[in-house]
Image (cartoon, rainbow, N blue to C red; front, side):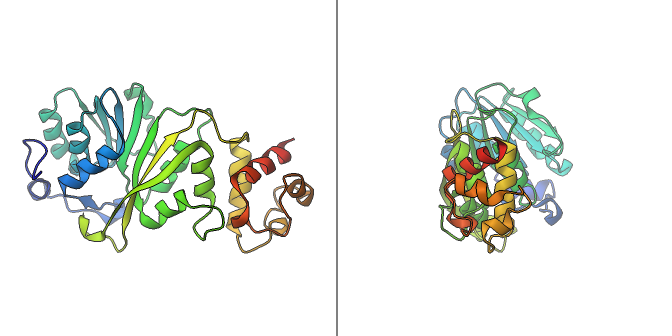
Length: 279
């Protein structure tokens, strides 16, 4: 599949519009349309879905999403240099692509989307984790999205899917696996990108659960987990002493040893601790 539509190859698009990736924007462009279409397929059946894409750049993944049948794509791009290339894609897929020149951290995309909504993006490295945490911690649940299919640095992807007891296990694993099923579905070497980053990348697919696995207040759970893993080498009775004055009693009530460290505490125990602190 040399091309997935009648548009020019991405390398030609980048040359035509002089789209050199900017490090300040966390840009690394994926030019292989075979790969962008494969990433789009990891999101599942896109027909009948609106898709939110952050940081489309020259539009490789955008083209994959549209070619795979997305009902409509809302692409949010901060870099105005990319707008002419994205406009060419919009012309090739009439009424199916909306492009907003905006900062994804400052925009409410729901004004432009209709359910069901899937988020699929090769996230800019400098905002990827912050966006994920926002999507995982809305005020109410279920969220606006049914699934997230996101590319990260491989190290971040491992932190999202990590299991208890592993070195990568931490706040991202807790927040991701509390309210979603999370799995790594693809890995990509540095040479797949222009310019090639120094590390490998990976695609993570998260499917929203109807309700969290265990009851807990989101703000309290986030605060407790952050405190525990910010000083992960310390025993929890020390790392969490700022969370509650009687933290040892709360830990014991949640079936956690005060001498345990954060990486050995299961998701269910973290949720029990959050409930106990709030009680």
